[in-house]
Image (cartoon, rainbow, N blue to C red; front, side, top):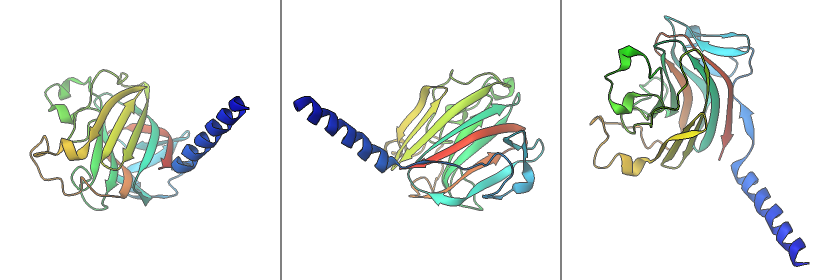
Length: 210
């Protein structure tokens, strides 16, 4: 009887946790840019992938705001590729400052050899540097998860946690780049890709609200 009661408690606890976290939804349908807004001319769809165009890009937003969430996606960089994931961002403004930009960058490219630590892949741009070494070489697929829960931001790349930070601590007494980040503590905002004129492929873009 005790064992049955214990198992019942475990099942109820698991169900409660699942209910709190919600369900996974697909932000990209694999066919077109339905649900996306902004620089739609700078992006396209091919073979089930969403990609930023070479000499294109710009800020492409999913047309809905989110507060706490887990975002999962796969991406593939071209050599020297540069992009970003904007979270809790304000439309029409620089997401790195009016929200947050999680860097997407080919860390191994010689042209990026002398960047600041907070500019490499996975970093919260200007605020929190990411641990390096988990990124796969250009041309290979990477799997990334971004978890935003209150002021806690965690980035996991190919199974390795590369950022786990409390923004309240990271911004004290100032951000790493010494600049103002008016949107760093936005409670909610848009999620988007921030292209910089490189071909970057994305697929399996899934989100779960917390």
